[in-house]
Amino acid sequence: MTSIKPRLKTADYVKGVLQGDRIMLGQAITLVESNLLTDQQLAANIIKKIIDHTGRSIRIGITGVPGVGKSTFIESFGLRVISHGKKLAVLTIDPSSKITKGSILGDKTRMESLSKNPLAFIRPSAAGDTQGGVAHKTREALLLCEAAGYDVIIIETVGVGQSEVEVKSMVDFFLLLMLAGAGDELQGIKKGIIEMADAIVITKADGDNIHPAVEAQAAYQQALHLLPISPSRWQPKVLTCSAVTGSGLETIWEMIELYIEQTTASGFFLQNRQQQNVSWFNDNFEQLIKADIEQHLALKKSHLENKVAQQQLSPQAAAQELLEAYYHSMKKF
Ligand code: GDP
Image 1 (cartoon, rainbow, N blue to C red):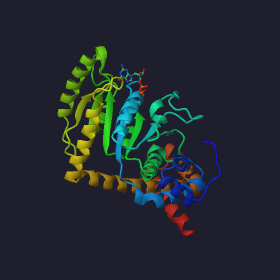
Image 2 (cartoon, rainbow, N blue to C red):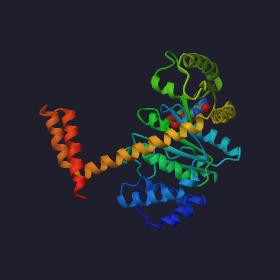
Image 3 (spheres, rainbow, N blue to C red):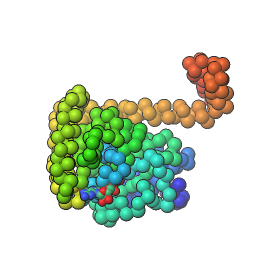
Image 4 (tube, rainbow, N blue to C red):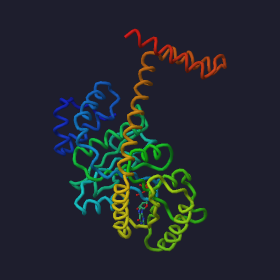
């Protein structure tokens, strides 16, 4: 884990974050990610105090298989977003990695110019070793970034599993990056992820790759037309871009602005945020109960697990017994 710095008081972190102090923001996120109970309590207190200052950013999820060009895209697109007078935060999730000595995805030079830009804040965060998983920590980091005045927050995840669903549940707009490929256009990415996308962007549309990119664009557009209309009533778009030449990037930004405009006018934007907040609350509650059971009833639970494994007890009966044991333990407090 990150090296332990002496902790400050809640009010100091709150003040620093609200002033947009990047060092304090970074330290507050470290508290959020910490597995130490005292840090978690401090983080919870900070979040409680800043909650009124959150919710005002555009939250964008970006995913795609390794090599599709995510970091190159975020770097070019991010600089463009900044050129529109926005402050940008990028939270990167790699579910398979643990952060070691500040390096993530084995590449220290990811998003180099963006990371040097005073209007950008980049924070890698590994999900591999955190309790409560990626969603919990990233959501809190997102709130801290909002309180620190970031107008646009990109949450990047590598397209290999469960984290996409979690990211979708915390963003306003979900962008899937795809390569123009030979053969099956839909290879490598699960259909479920395509269905979640508000837009697909075919990357690396430059040089000899322009033509295949345009072909892939048409194929995906056709595939998306076959999907049922999403609750947002937004018809997902397929665009092409090159992070190297910059072509298509402005159109992507305009599309996101249009989405925000349309879904705000229809009421979906707010409704979606409200639903996300409620499911976040439910997740938190479930997690507290789980942690409590692990803490007070670990032995009982493993005993029941053994019985279930041996078919001496039905899973349902075991669950009921654990719940009763939990009630019983609660009465002791
Ligand atoms: P990630 O693993 O998804 O983050 O992908 P990277 O951003 O690291 O990009 C993978 C490779 O594709 C790198 O060698 C990039 O230089 C290259 N690449 C990324 N974007 C573009 C692009 O727009 N055009 C071209 N020609 N190459 C690109």
